[in-house]
Amino acid sequence: RSNAEKFEFQAEVSRLMDIIINSLYSNKDIFLRELISNASDALDKIRFLSLTDKEVLGEGDNTKLDIQIKLDKEKKILSIRDRGIGMTKEDLIKNLGTIAKSGTSAFVEKMQTSGDLNLIGQFGVGFYSVYLVADYVEVISKHNEDKQYVWESKADGAFAISEDTWNEPLGRGTEIRLHLKEEAGEYLEESKLKELVKRYSEFINFPIYIWASKEVDVEVPADEDDSGDEDDSADGSSKEETEDEDADKGEDEDKPKTKTVKETTYEWELLNDVKAIWLRNPKEVTEEEYTKFYHSLAKDFSDEKPLSWSHFTAEGDVEFKAVLFVPPKAPQDLYESYYNANKSNLKLYVRRVFISDEFDELLPKYLNFLRGLVDSDTLPLNVSREMLQQHNSLKTIKKKLIRKALDMIRRIADEDPDESSDREKKEDASSDNDEKKGQYVKFWNEFGKSIKLGIIEDATNRNRLAKLLRFESTKSDGKLTSLDQYISRMKAGQKDIFYITGTSKEQLEKSPFLEQLKKKNFEVIYFTDPVDEYLMQYLMDYEDKKFQNVSKEGLKLGKDTKNKELKESFKDLTKWWKTALSKDNVDDVKISNRLDNTPCVVVTSKYGWSANMERIMQSQTL
Ligand code: ADP
Ligand code: MG
Image 1 (cartoon, rainbow, N blue to C red):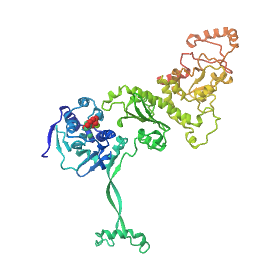
Image 2 (cartoon, rainbow, N blue to C red):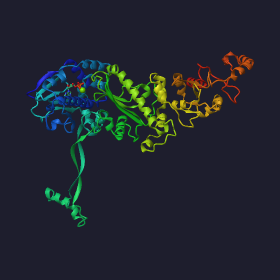
Image 3 (cartoon, rainbow, N blue to C red):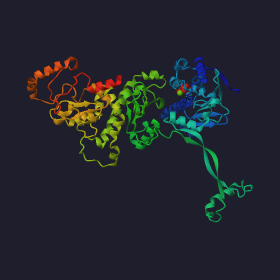
Image 4 (cartoon, rainbow, N blue to C red):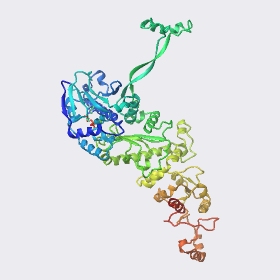
């Protein structure tokens, strides 16, 4: 072009482009997310300006803050257009080539070692990802304060800028035209683009449209005789004939007057109809919307509802919005790779821009079963993930998320009529209650182990987590019960919370350790999950009550005056027994008040492993 001005890319930028255009990186999809993210940024900027100056939006179509994707299959052009702030000639020169950002060399360095191209956006050079799929790119841009310009480059070390005298005026904003590489043909498929927008940009705050083709049925006049074409051009009259068809019904039914043919039409199709739910007022979001949002977030297209959710805004030093979900089911492998895989299922957005869904620093491992997203206004956008992971705000975010998550889980129990501690409480016969009925048991069966792991791992929230614990006991009647309920049933004078560990309830029910306790009407918790042994090494007390393993030394069932006498009279026997069993087998032989029918029992020392723990340890070493 005669009016084109040529520029060299800054050296670092040029290297970056070389790397990208020659990249064998397989996930080329990311370019679209980067372009949409840029479009969204540009829209955010003009929107921000319009807050103080309405004039900047102009009028007519210019006021529409949207993003449009268009395909030209013949010319192999994919274009993305926004009505954002646009770029002046100077902006184009600086932003797209001559001024390297701080992230440029960092990213180049990264890519030369073991970098993941997927991070490109976080280094502030996302635009150049267009060269993953295109070998020639045009950027047409119109800023309110300048004329319309075209930036173009074939990633050959140089770019050109020309005043745009041939394209249609944009009004305001930017259109990026990607002349796709031969091997990038898939990006000419509407379905592919729709999928990508759904996957990466669904929750962009501006409407994203695609110029979509649609096969429609069109009624055209049926040819009276196939060879004849006399009437074909008579458009007006044939239409009338069609409209009259109804009236003519019955007259000559055997002769259809119209026929249906397929025709391709185009129209703007909105791709992100799910509005960013987390930005809305929770009071205005329906249950169905949350459910749908959960499904898209979790890519869980069953029709099961999440068990619970929490939508909140955190304010103060660290501001963020978050939506958390408890899924209806645990994934198969939730505990399989618990200690190796560190995979949180929260999506992290920073200022509406999707950053990552593999960000481990947001939640502790034991809450990895949750789904949801966090949108932070405090975290910086253009830093590497490593830097983001070390950002100060994350600690605060994590702390608040845990709190909210535990509240949310507790709410499942609180709203579950099966859970109410006073079971005689008149059943509130509302349908809402029906829906919540049995939800906590469901939660417990799916994720109970996570709560136990939480008690082990999270000392800060141990008490909160212990509240969520459920188990069976000698008095729970086959149902699950909680520590609070246990405490409410404790006998006068009972100091400790009694429990016993073993492989199954059936096995434990027969245990001689329970004889006296049962007789004296004490409640004993059954812990039958292998993790329970570990759990009880961390859960020492609850609400000022100590836990006592009834198979261990130290069991106190209140005052027993006879004990002293018995001790005296059986002194010789216990002494003899102790020597007879030798030191290697037992530590001590004692008179006990814990038995009823069984004459004697082997008890574990207070700080030793329980018999059940021995069994678990043995099975692990085998
Ligand atoms: P980042 O978005 O992190 O700043 P990019 O490489 O994606 O980095 O974009 C570089 C710059 O180009 C942006 O900061 C912006 O100034 C400009 N830019 C890119 N796309 C657009 C657009 N659609 N509208 C306006 N400016 C844009
Ligand atoms: Mg960008």
